Length: 223
Image (cartoon, helix red, strand yellow):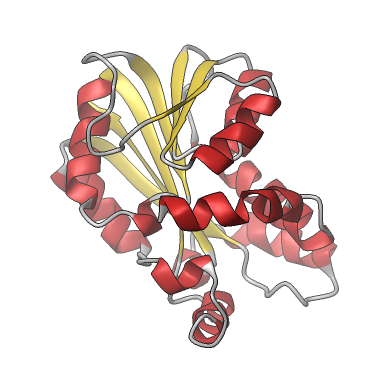
């Protein structure tokens, strides 16, 4: 997978500057940071990619480090002045109880043994530390069509494993986390023309309709 992401790193980063990318990014960040209760401290952006969330955490005052397996992604992230390293999510290069927050957005789709990564997240979090994982929801209408497209055109979705909110919740609970909750946003596909309407619906329905959302997030606390 790292080789694939090396190839698409530039295109991936450019997508955030498109109209669709700006809407998706803005709405997903609203969800992520409305769920997080940790407002400061040391943070790990796990699967940081080109540094989108690493940069946002830094802007919000966190002492943040990003970790990713793709050198191509990391090259772009570090060009933004971010503190990022190459590493393996299955064996995090940090001591026990190093972080107040671990954030991982759209990485879990591309790992094969999520329980091992959850165990590593639990290990490096301080007691009372918070984790938030964001993934794509394969049961949403938008991603159904994206997965169908990936059968004919190579995209990241060809290699992805998708989760439901329930599956993400169980992953954290089985990994020893408490106060587990989930939510979701992005209920309309990218060609939907009325983005202001879409954003209002996202913010109103992010809890009740999360099973239909294209982007889902789950948070938990290390006891």
